[in-house]
Length: 626
Image (cartoon, rainbow, N blue to C red; front, side, top):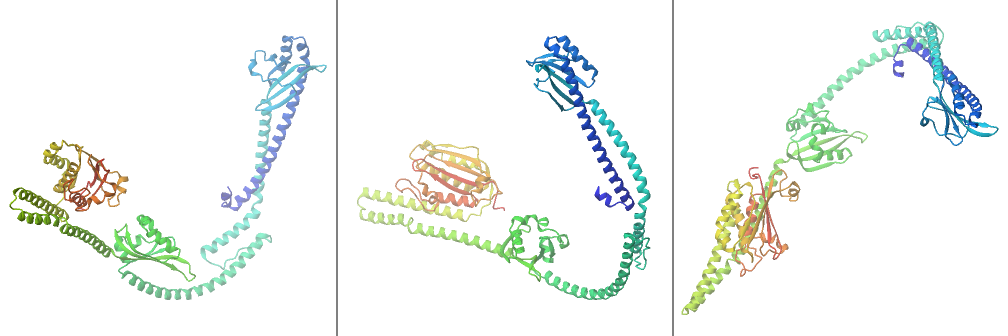
């Protein structure tokens, strides 16, 4: 309301102020009149009802004294003359109702008796209790309930009269204000018209006409004096502006030349350069950065960095920019951009004004993608080289120990054979020993060749049905399974990308271990599950965006100590004596090599005498292709 009144013409404003003031004053007066009148009417009504109660109570003494109910109801029937009384009753001293008005009113509608003289307003009714006594002896209590509709009708009448008075007074006030407001508004309107002409034409020689010596007249004199000063100042400013425009043109030309020179240098840089204000909005972007982002610089200028590239919020760049805005000089030697999927050496330099206040950040990004890729390849080659060196060390170990042992035995038994050539029994025994040593050497050499082939395998991956792999192995192990009465329980296995021959050798070595290292009837339980995301996150070497299968082989063999769970996959590592169980110690090392070749994991768990469980994790996608 105040805003609308502020924007109205002064004539309407003056009339509105007068009329609103009159309306408020008249409304307050009428409201006070109606309130006082209604309170006075209530007091009068309560006094009348109280007097009526005294009369009815006095006339009811005989009826109560003689317990004449008809006489009591006849006394109450006198209330018909009072149209406001809608209900009444006479209570006996024991609080029971003796007579009612109207006579057929239900007893349940009457309240509990109050043993005192009491009148009060509640809602739209006046309630009252009046004691009935005779010579100070209590005979009963009178109850009266009165409707206030007569009072409300009177108040309504007062309100209508008040509204009529307000309307008439407002009309008179409107006529008078209409006649008198011109003495104030007309000089002001004329002054406003003069100011409008000066504003539109810019002619400061025009002067306003003074119409009196009051405050508006003083305002007119001040306005004319101000016009004289403005006219003088305007002439000076015009002369000054002409000189200033000439200087601005000269300075602008110099600044443009400097700007072009700086932009040429920045755009010639091989690095990505950008400048942000203190709200991290782009204010400059060089040509190399625009080429990398494949976005024209004018489409980025003015945008917040998170609006343009929301991916950088969690990449480290946003945090570095925030630190630079606090005055830190930041150098991130290796930043991986989530936008370009490239690596940069980033510099974040706070920009400060003459008062050392930071107003922005200069960022410089040097492309080191090729260097990083070369380093990663070098690290990978170094890792593979170290792995090859470890394999060579293991091969050197077996050449100096495991292979020399059967050779030493062959030499020894050959010498003994020459010495005891006449003893046929001893000769046969020595020949058997020589054959056993030769067979072990042959097996060692064959296992070493197998291990070497796996290390250098470049065979193509293909979709391999593990069910067919396992079924073919069961056929191969048929005689051994029948001989040992072994049982293999397995579910429906998946199809995975891999090298079928290597996966067959993987399953074969694990099943062969379970059949070999047992003193009981072998039972091998195979299970297969899809690896859950939580389980994938437990193995840092696994990729989060690739599905994996977990295949477990559980047997009831001799098991092994838990501390050897990693040692068992080392080449030529055997936990059991050669006399107890045959083997070269290469089987599980081959398994590890095959699983590594398939970008998976293998680990074993066991307890002495309680069997072992070997878990194989294989990817469901060909990671060689990616």
